[in-house]
Structure formats: C-alpha cells, structure tokens
Length: 324
Length: 259
Image: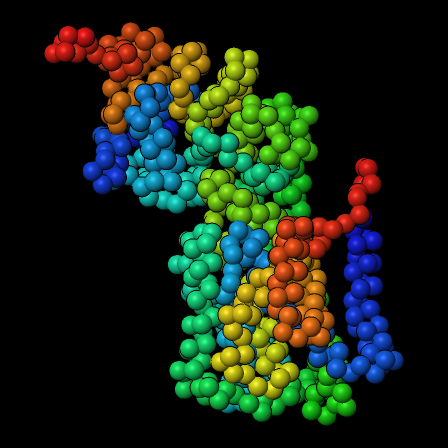
C-alpha cells in the first residue's frame, strides 16, 4: 500500500467512526452502545501505552496505576479547584508521565519477569494510596463530578458544555474517538519514525543498542513516560464519563486486561491494542448469556487464540501478493 | 610516542577473583593490536572495561588523553571507541540494511523530536544514513543480503554485519571481540581482508582472538595475557619467540612430579 492509500483508508475509518457509527446507532435505537464503544476507545488508549512499553521490551502490568492516578488528578482538580475538565485532561497525563519518570528511573533497569513483577504491584500501591491520602476522600471516592464544561475561543464555541447537551453520551463518544485517533496517530508516527527503530533496537538487544550510541536509559524512561501519559488521559476521561472515581475504579485485573488487549491485537502492530480491546470487550459481553461458564469459556478462548495466533489477531492476513 | 588509546594499571576484581591485574599498554593510531591469551586469561573483561561496559576496580583507560573509564557505554561510543560483540549480537528481526541504518545513531544531527515531526534535518539525516549504509554494505560485500532478515544470515556474514554495525558509528577505535571465531579457512581469510580494509579507512583496531595463524598474520603488535596479567607485548615475531608466551600456552615442565 502506498502512503496515499493508507491515509485515505485511515480517513475513511475515522469518518465511519465519527459519522457512520452514530447514524447506525440512531437508526437502530441502541443508545446503550455509545457507552460500550466509548469504553473501548478509552481502554484502547490506555492499552496503547502498555503496547509502547512492550515495544521497548518491557512487560507492563501496572498501567491501571496510571489510569487511576490520571482519574484522581482530573477529578480533584475539577471538584476542589473548579478547573475546566479539558485543561485537567493534559495535566492528568503530564502528572502521570512525571510520576512514571520517578518510578521508571530505578525499575526500568529490571528486565523480563522482574520488571513485570514490580509493575504488577504498582496498581495495588496506587489503590492503597487512594484509600489513604486525605485529598482522595478514601473509599467513598470522589462522586458527582460535574460534566465537562464548554470551551470557546474568541466567542467561537469549540466544545459545547456537556451539561446542556441533549445527548452527552454521543458527545463523550465523539470526544473519545477523537482522542483515540489523535493518540494512535501520534503513536503510529512515533513507531514509524526513527524513534520506533531505536525502541525496537532496545527490545532486541540493549547492550548492542548502547554500543552504537543509544542512550538506553533515557529512551526507556521516555517510552514509559509516554505510556503512562496515555494511561492518565484514559483514566481522566473515564472519571469524567462516570462522573466518579473510586480506589477500585482500576484494579490489578484491569492492568492485566490492558496487557491482554495488546497480546490479543498483536505486539507488532500499532493498531493492535484497538482491535484487541474491541475483541476482548465485546467477546466478554457476548459470553454473558453463558452465565457461570462465562469466565471459563472466555479464558479458554484466549488461550487457544494465543496458541494459534501468537502474533495477535492482526497477524491474520491474506497471503501477500508477490512483489507487494 | 603518543597513543590514541591508553590502558594504565587496569585492575578488575570480582570479589576474591582477580580478572585483570595491573594491565598497561597503549594502542597507536591506525594499528591493528591483538590481545591474546589462554581461556580465562581476562581478555573479555579487559575488552568490557575499555568499552566501559564494566568499570575498573583500579586504573583507567584514556582515549586521546581523556579518561573514559566510568562513562556510560553510549558516551564512550560517542567519543569514538566502539565495540562489537563476541556472540553474534545483532538486531535479529531487522533487515541487514536496517541494522546498519539504525547504527548511524551517533551521526544524527537532530533530536528525537526532530525525527518525530520529520523536520528537514531529520529527513536529510535519514537519507544520508541510507546512503552510508549502502556504501558499507558494498564495502563489506553484503550486497546480496541487503534486504535479508539478519537472523537468517550465515555465520560468516553475521560477523561481517557485526563489523558493519560498528563501522556505521564512524569509530576512531573499533574493538573486535573474536571476529574469526568459528570460521572455516576461507571465511577467516575473507574476514582478515575485511579487517585490513577497515584499518585502511583510518580506523584503529583492537581485537581479541583465539585463531593464532590469523592473529600472527594480521597484527602489527600483540599483547599477551595470562591469569589476568600482561606477560608479553611486541610484534608477532617477538611474541612467537617469547619464552613466557610459550610457557603460558604449552605449560611449564613441572620438575617436582617429574613431567
């Protein structure tokens, strides 16, 4: 595929998500799907961060910690200081990035299962912190967070006040899709630029990478910071949509799911987390009918998928034409 | 005589084990200097210390008069001292060309942000790296494997790729860790030619090697280690006649047990 066709295809997909999906939902009257699809968009942003840490060769099972942190940062800023949600969104990401630099500097020296084990504890640490720190209101959490206000520039309304909207679900859906497109666009650019090659060189051999002059310590921290930034963004959006955040909003199980989303979609493909999240989320919901067997069938299916398609769903492609 | 690389009183202890003990020697610009010694003599430890992958317990390594011991490896590489690896260490899933292109990292004139946004300098860099990679590929005779995935290369070509990765960093001193290991006669002869050609590009070469005929053939000077200490230094001819070296390799007669 040439770059022009790729761009055209991407534009068509975005157009479908922004116009086609709402039209279909309006036609079928399935308004509940908005919440589901919004969740998928946001979860895939968070998983996209995990994917980037995979790309530098680190197994990250701690993304829930940053989603939780991002959610609380935004919620506290909105409720206690009355700051506009749209301003708290990047702030939540940046706070998470900063926290991840502090945490990452020591722990990113670990590799393989050791890094994974340390990150596994992060979500639990963050949950306990949320319970203990006074500003987070303990187990009661922060509730009744006001809906995002409007943004206008020179009298021109860029984003309407969500509280005045007829259908805030649609607004959240559109905002989440736009955010997802922006995040994955940036991630795609990152991975397909020289930076992506440098990350890949780290994944394959850190010693060799440093011998050709790559500052492996700073690249590792940078990738982890971007990863956590995405986690923070997603967490903040979730807090805004559910208008609440609790210490249990993101748990260890969520962190594991973020990792699974990446596995399922494919670790070699930037867009893997989107597909993985979609498949995992809907797969789980579809199995709801099976009652007590839901988890059993679900996990068996996952194991089979990983055995049959170790490189993820996106590795399932038609055979390439010769010379393509 | 000025040395480009100077090793002085280099000592490395791992707990009670002394891997290197008071090793001193200098490397002249544009020479090929080999470090040899029996297994466990401390050659690899010496190499790791020179490339700053390991910090010496005592002593130091100076490059053009500047102390490089204790700096991180990527900084030492930036100064111009670059190592290749004993194992076939390459970026396995990348193509041969991509391996060499990524190794041009040190020549980048713009930061990561520049590459992200694709600025003019970044695009110029990319184009220059690709040209230079192609030149190195032709220079080392890897033309047929240009787009081959690196892990599919035969052994001899893997070594060449390792050297190519080293060359891409534009080093002043290239440290080659056993470049002829596991090669047959023909492959070794080709590899020796490659190393000579690399030196002809103005690169100073320091190599660790077991293959004695190749070492005697290629080296300007040789340093011999045994049990972590330097026991001899000189031209290949001097080393071949040195009694200490002969003892180290063949063993000394032990009169007490009548052997």
